[in-house]
Length: 614
Image (tube, rainbow, N blue to C red; front, side, top):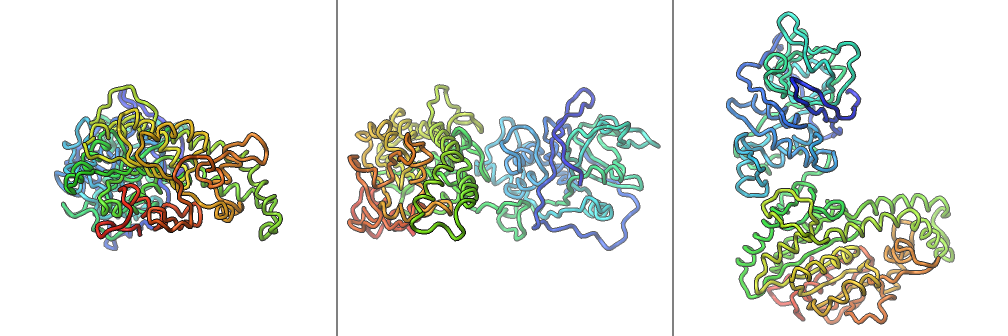
């Protein structure tokens, strides 16, 4: 396979086309294509009747796959721009800017969503979270795909002869701009030291004794009506990837296929999380994580579904919980938490909205901290009498190597609730605005006399929700209750920001470990205390060496605070149950989460209608 080069551009008839495709990440689960055993024809030419398109921007991967799909079924013209948009969502690149995609990205998108016909992908783009749009796209599913070995010419020829076309990517150079005319055929030649300009995706629709027949997406004026021959030696020197694919039977449900998705990451669960999750990236802005992108339109659709769900349940009160996960959790893991607890919340007639927010590389850095600390810790760990000294050394290291990441995480948490002055277009499928603020504004628009908004946050989620509480109050959205589970917010920040709002919050509770349990916890494999001790002594940079910055989730720092506290080990009354034994236990502890449920509903006991956490 050719070595990747940075993206470039190529000028053809005054138009600039971006070459920004990169080689795909190898996935051992790909099924390799096996060539036919019957003799192959000496030449294959599938140009007849094929329609050559002109790509906009860096959308060649979508156009290449659309061309291959069209070869499988006469009259089938799918949207290359939908495939490209989905490719930007699923590929290995960060963000969704128009900087190209990978073949695996567009294959993932087709696998998970299907694809719309070309004339159904309109401007502005359809909302893929719309059930009608999703159902229409699902009518053209992926059927099968195989990775073809680019360097095996017989495999490539066999795949073209069998499938009619193969979807490929390779490096391009100036020789692609104007192929040479040789014996009546247009041939791509690298002349006079042409440098590679970047990666490009296209379809191979035939072959002969010279090379492969390229169907390009640079318009019908390129080469011979949009087609040219790529010599075999040139293909072997520049090839990235090749896939043989075909559509499935029209209307086959997307979730019924038994072969793996064309992706290195595990396929998403069948649960549609779009009505229950707000995805946030850096600086708290709306982002895409996994299978969907959050936007004003998605948030509005989620709250519209919330209204419908509450109406179906009936009753005078309409409960909605806004949940924020902790700081050692990625956005994808935030979605896992939302999926894990979704049915439980709904079974108790509480509509959940989880913020899958960007907490930064803290967990990775903790692993690095452990590796660094092991250099000076004795094998097998320190003796008991040295534990405190070793922990103090780890704290010094953490203050120097991790405090910046903690600061970044707090910035992301607070930035998600920054004020917005502009008018919000709730039909927009993209937005640069902070996601928690948009959620607060949308909630204001969906307030009902019986609406009860509840905040539940674990660890650093308390920092996120404190900022959101300020935004909700500013938007005149009443908060019925707030429950913090081992909150990592400092006492000073709590006093300065949330405490003044408590008279306007119906109920507030903090769950926390006892100090003995904090001291018995382990963080990062080498720190013999809970992460809140590390936050207090290192991440928050105490003024004096060996000092502590008071943290709201630490029992030792709660003295003098006039707030309800439930300590681990408390078992009566039922609203004060907490059996957590470590910092990470709270959001999965049956006693804690059941107590949180009762506090949300303002109940003092379970009844037959309520389901304990499990």
